Image (cartoon, rainbow, N blue to C red; front, side):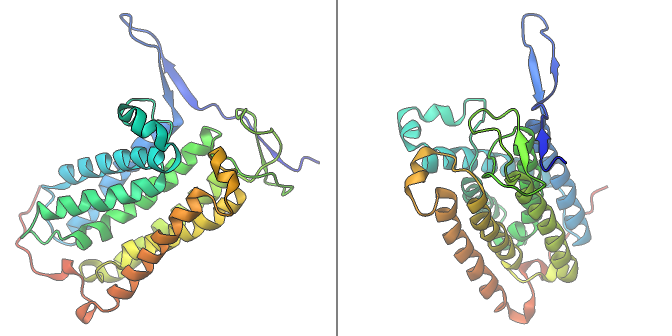
Length: 287
């Protein structure tokens, strides 16, 4: 009786052949899932804005801010937290493909900074920092689910050895011994999908009156508490982490969880439990 799963999925879906001396170009699952996260996420934000009677004029700008914030934040975070010597020796490597290193903690910081700058540029429209981030965080959770599933398709960020019947043998991963391992990417992907439904339930309960900071607080506590726990089941990403009691992912998760708790506590002090989206804002109807 087989007590493990042989994971032989190819990272590539298909390859676009060479044309006019350019190519070939491989189309990878990771890239497709990454893009799908943004595309579906944009539709979620459009739905929320419509339900709350807000203008859709800024959706494209908001989507662009999100893409840049996540990619730049995740790339800078990866090099800053895991390869600082490369960041200071060759900063251009941050923006040069392929994007093989993305740090979720860096992405979280990037989103916070990007949306803070976005909110400052939209003063007077009702799109305050907490109004925007409490709604956009649903799409971030969805993107996290897709990205972790992309990691599974890439056979990267693998788990530690296990004798559980759902252990994966990652045949395309040559960095670690090919023995049954925890599918840690799948654990994180599923937990993010569950979080999407939790956040949608919270928003559906309050809608425009969502207490300020509640949803981003729930996101930070959920994602980074589970990230802290999942790290016990994962192989370290960098060799230097082997010398620490906690790896870098766990160390960085602690302040993220504390920040999330702070946001949740502050949200309970929101007057009349009304978020900033409950203010009356003139609306232009888009057809």
